Length: 121
Image 1 (tube, rainbow, N blue to C red):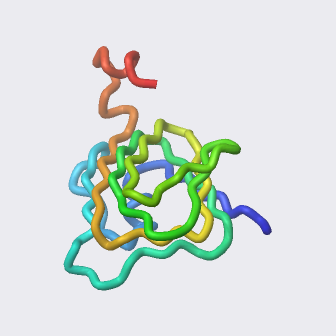
Image 2 (cartoon, rainbow, N blue to C red):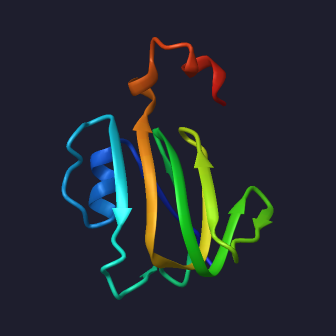
């Protein structure tokens, strides 16, 4: 099975991938998956490797599928909090996410010049 790789250079590309309008700020965004939606979000059945030029903190309820960081498979049955750094890759296989969840994304330029830039890895 071939793995499809998707890299997001900026938040606008990430929003477009999710079918959302452009973010209000080019370097910072909070993405909310509305609980009003009746449809869950389902990735393709094939493997997808995702990465971006930004940090993300996601809180999601994954109902099925698998998440891999490197060769490590993570158990996501009781809700999941996912942290990603710029250029970090995560592989998802057959992922199905409940229609409630939040993701905070911010470009690495958003924290450039602040001490936190050197403290988070």
